[in-house]
Image (cartoon, rainbow over all chains, first blue to last red; front, top):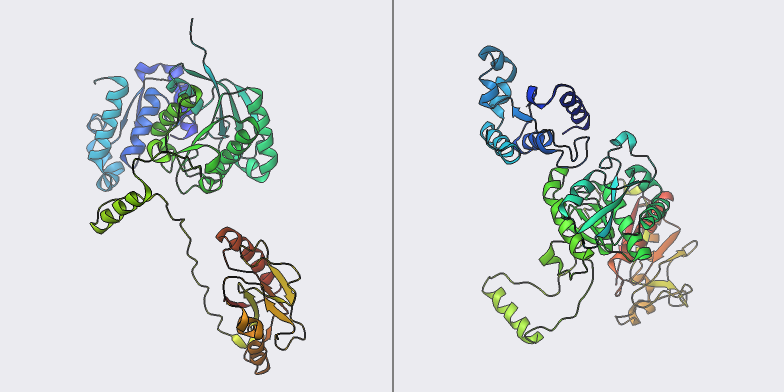
Length: 108
Length: 351
């Protein structure tokens, strides 16, 4: 995950506490999405950014995951995300994000 | 009482050292006590057997623009922590970072005599240049491979720190270091060779005991086209030199090449030139050196106006047994001079 984004998320988590924050991501493929989920849950796995070795314990979801998609007005979702959803490997992204959350945050 | 821990120093670039991205790539070396960046994960993965006592950080641009100086500075900083093992990178497929990691491995292994562990992607130029100076594990081509690379590096570093034996490159997953180790084989050479041959004939997998080097292939340049305005140079690996071989180019495994003047030379002759080349019968080359270096034919083309002119100097070395690395080095220098002299194309002859 981008170093600047790691710094911003770290700052927000310190300000608002982890219980009131959910991170929504928009990675283009499963592995990068999984890395982002891991970064905010357990620390930067590449040990490059401000979250290296920092376990925020935040939950992150990709925008195409049903937990997020179902919360969004269908027309707005279609307009903003629909096009990308058609070209992304949605199943792989969902599976990867879930497995990373389970690995670091336990069952949901 | 807790067991004594071995001491580890970790070298990383400005990015993994959490100083910044490309905009900070020109920072000179600095050191931080304890673990920074991947060293944090390394520390955890060593399970308390070893401890990262210091992290040395340098910008990739700085390191590559001041290679010798930076390697020396980083080496001094690492030395100050008196490590038992040094870890560099992993650099994945980042070229400048890979070169820096390799140069650090070289200075550490040569001056401190301490084992070095690192990681790179196989196409990183650092592998070819520096793999022999450390245990460089194979990694993926980007930082997403850190998850797999770091535990593997930690494991190898731990075993080195505890003074344990390290297996072959194939067993352990590091790039070959060019080290040959003697061992007692179960069967003698002839039996092993026949077994390999039988496997080969059956189309089965077999492992050679003498892997061949991989040579690169060079795509030919496009055709010259306008030959009438072309300046042509003669270059040969056939060993033609002025009579007496003034530069003493060796008849085999040449350690140099020569550059000789052709001003006012219309053709070579037995009196003026000879070959220094071993490994073939030189009688016909010595009787008429134009057979190997066709100055006579080039002068003819010059007179007919089919080329603009023959370049004033020819270059010569002996191809017999000369290493590819040396040949490449000579060719690079020769080609650069020819380009500077405005030569259009080269006629390259051998024996």
